[in-house]
Every structure is written in C-alpha cells, then in structure tokens.
Amino acid sequence: MKLKSLTEFKYMTFDVVGTLIDFECGIKDCLARIADEAGVDMDGEQALTLYRAARYSEDADLFPDDLVRVYLQIAPKLGLPAEMHYGERLRDSAKDWNAFADSADALARLAKDYRLIAMTNARRWAFEYFARELGNPFYAAFTADDTGTEKPDPAFFEKVFDFVASEGNSKNDILHVAQSQYHDIGISRELGMTNCWIERRHAQKGYGGTIEPAEFTKPDYHFTSMASFADGVAEARK
Image (tube, rainbow, N blue to C red):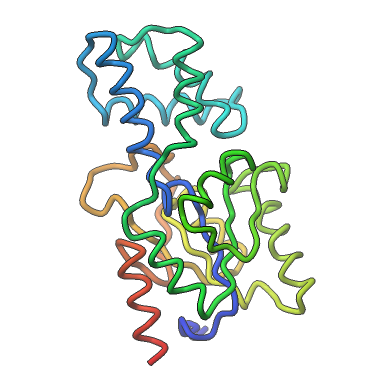
C-alpha cells in the first residue's frame, strides 16, 4: 500500500513523555540532587536502567505516581537513602520536567495545519504541567485517567479512534508520532495506523528509561528530533 504523504493527515497524535518531555533528564536530575545531598556518586545511565526494570513490574502503579514505589526499590542499589519523602520528591519532580528544546516550537508550527492530540500514559495531573511546558498546543488529550489503561494496550488507541470518528474521521486521518518502539510504534503498526518514529536516543546506546521492544518495528516516517520532523512536514507542504 502506498505510503500517505505528510500532507494528507488531519490529526497528529503524540506520545508526550519521552517524545516531547525529557523525562530521562528529569529523573536523572532529581536523583542526582538527592545523591549530592547524601554524598553519593551516581551513574545516570545506571539509574535509568534500574528505573526501567522497576517501572515495568507487575505491581506498577500509574505514572508518575509510581515513581514513589520505583524510588524505594532502586535507591538501595544506587546507594541512596530509601526514604518515602525522597520517593515523593521524585514523583513531584514531574511538575518541573523540561520539554526537549525543540518540542514547543515544532508543535506550534504543526498546530497551524493539523489537530494535535496528546496520548500519554501519565495521569491527568502530570499532563497538565507537561501541556503548559509545551505551550498548550493540543486540540485534545487522552491520559491514563481518561482511558483507564496504558499504551501499548489497543484499548487506549481505540478511545482516540472513537473521538476522531465522532468528528466524522477515521484512524486513516491520523499520523501517530512517538519515540517509544514498545509503547507506540509497534502497536500503531498492528492497528493499521501510519506512524512516525522520533528517535530521541539516536546518539546514545540502548533504550534508556523506555522498555526494549520484543522486536524492532520499522516506522513509516523516521526523524531524530521534533525540529527535523516539523521541517520535513513544512517541506512536504510546499
């Protein structure tokens, strides 16, 4: 089947944490401050590896509330004090996580021609901070609280399909944009969506704080930043 042009979509759906918001730096920075206070040397990439293993356990809670549990689990392995208030501090740090430097500008450019929809596994309270950090560019937003589930559960995507259908459109009118192969790119392919992979860690080894997929999915579109994606869209629209 012929690949749809970037100009043919009415909607762009976006993963938020990891694609638009730099959660890895947010987590590492908060843990580094705790480590400094405790007089401990900490390896940021090791912290992400431990975070990933702890985050994707069977007893995980919704994000970022789950960071309290995660912190208490990984703190001893990092030599950090395993105290509840530090876990709560890590959770609350989500309110101050920065967007990637190119996110807000790229979204503002794209919002001129497309309806932008946020699709995040974060809870609504955290998303409100993320949206503000991004300049509130979204036409609609779906969080874990709204869907009752998390990506890559197809039910999350179905909620968005239903919303788009209520406006007389279909999933064929959506380009799904995300950095996570596990949460987004693989399942969007299975559901018949056109997708775009933003490979944020293209200059780094491994999957960082994101779970590794069982198998790699070649995306329909591939960029290494939101800036280059927005440039690609602008070029296609000339």
